[in-house]
Amino acid sequence: VPLVESGGGLVQAGGSLRLSCAASGRTFSMHVMGWFRQAPGKEREFVAAIFWSGGSTSYADSVKGRFTASRDNAKNTVYLQMNSLKPEDTAVYYCAARLLIKNEYAYWGQGTQVTVSS
Image (cartoon, rainbow, N blue to C red; front, top):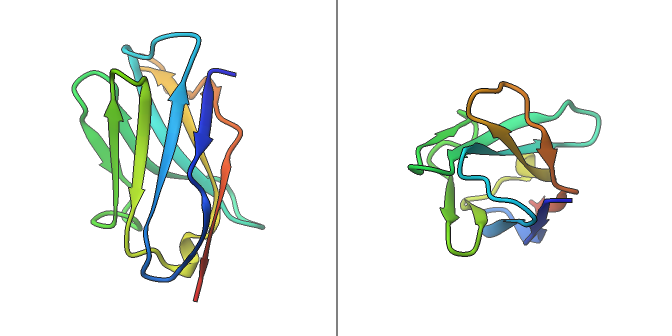
């Protein structure tokens, strides 16, 4: 498994968490790294993405201004800084990777639970 998430947990509304996604076994310099989440009874949804090369980012409207994606090339790790968390952010968060020229994410992590209490 080339992607391993960590950093999830339980936090009160208004709090912050930082998720990490460590990539191993290969480099992802030609990839886009995505963050997705899936809440109970809901479909998986896009949260954020970052181009490994260059660092351009994009965000879902629901998290724009609160979440920030970043990467550390030396550590082969991408991050999702989540601030001003809301109960509706509660979900299992996944990181994923796709080639720049592909639409589908081919690599997925195992997910990490984020629970925001009100």
